[in-house]
Picture 1: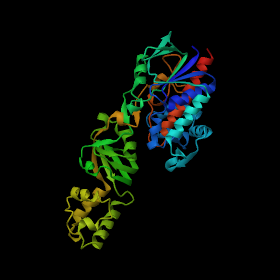
Picture 2: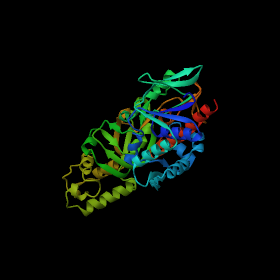
Picture 3: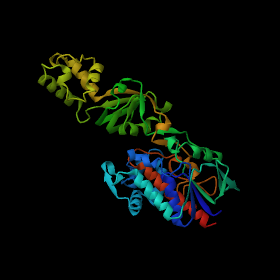
Picture 4: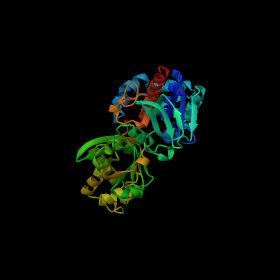
Length: 417
């Protein structure tokens, strides 16, 4: 069937594009290379699926530092409230948590995937799993079909590419869409990891691997200039740092030369206290436990695994008695508690990133329709685009919005033929 929309990629943007196109009245076919839809979506938010963020459009754009302004039109067409109403309409009860993050009440990403799958079937979308796109067929600068890796061709008057980025390749996001778009003459901005853990030059975080710290602050500097600050939870790993605040800072760090190598980090273990206040607390603790070994006198200061390391970095013998600590040693310890230094060696590989930064160049795409400016009948949506954001539901909202707009525009292309 020639007057058909083919959506390539069964992730969040692809499923939304297929639903939007079918709802508009088009005959829709959805290709997915895996054996099921929504494989990556099913593991988002640690399996809970942070569907969106209940924030105003301008705030969502602000939290999409990777070209979020490009989505202004799409977000006005399908905003966070639209996404919430859509999923509620599918029978997915929602709740709003800290930071206006929206989750299903069930805390199950699989419920979200199942609801989308059911909706696709109700709209009559033909789902073809184990179907991997190889190239798009064109005539006179217009899409006429698509060919898979088994050399099987299918006619189509509109195609929506939603093959995802290049992170988590085990879920099917192996970069196929970039190659297809490039072969059609589209430019691809450099790909890099975003929302990714960081390796450090220092080896001591490995000694604390598995230790999670809550309510801490993390500052990043490059060439002595501040580039970001985050407050929240941090996780030590065998290679360095992970956790929400590290992932958030990585967006800015990986955009630096050499992927942010040599970026200086300062971990504030006591952000609620000024350096002066912290020194007074240390003085009180040392005086109260003056007859105790230092390691015991300060036992309530930090997690047990962290204190010996801090004392070592401060050059203080851990089995010294509290009353033996000098003023110079106390001030050194206080300064480490407020600004524990670390140095970025490199980000973890792109395959381990939550999001791929970079993608199809936005100057070649119509922001109102997600249509290619180079080829009639071709549309893009989701992570394949050069758009990325912080954690908190922003990246999924970008997928829903671009998928909705692209699917509707693709459908109108076929219906007006």
